[in-house]
Image (tube, rainbow, N blue to C red; front, side):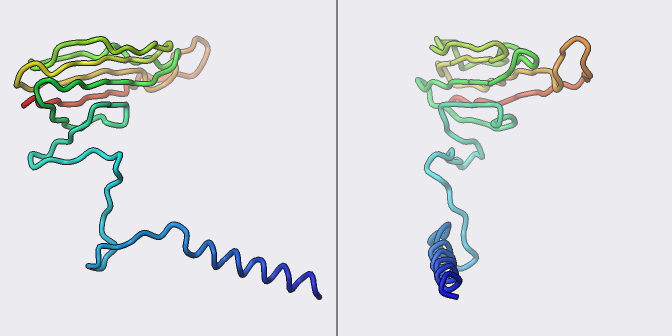
Length: 150
């Protein structure tokens, strides 16, 4: 009987310790409130966010930059599902050195905001691997971000 009590006591202690993990302080107004992590982009009054680095998960976003800011794009692909180079449509950005070594399938670029304007950045890659003798599809994954330079 003695080993069962120690095990029960250990489980009860562990349960109590874990009960406090993962909690966060509320805003005092009830409802839990939303928290923004420090690494999250900050929304502006115009609905766009400010951030210096973009990846595949940022597709569809609108990003605001000030003249002089630099934005970096890093799309991680694979040899069988490569990203096309990032295309630029609009004015306000100038290509700059991205300073990154690329792996097969990756698309990487960097741009400096040089004047006020709006630019659409885009890329795409196959939705399925394109290996010979394997099942494939004709789907395309698109990536698009609008950049507003103010």
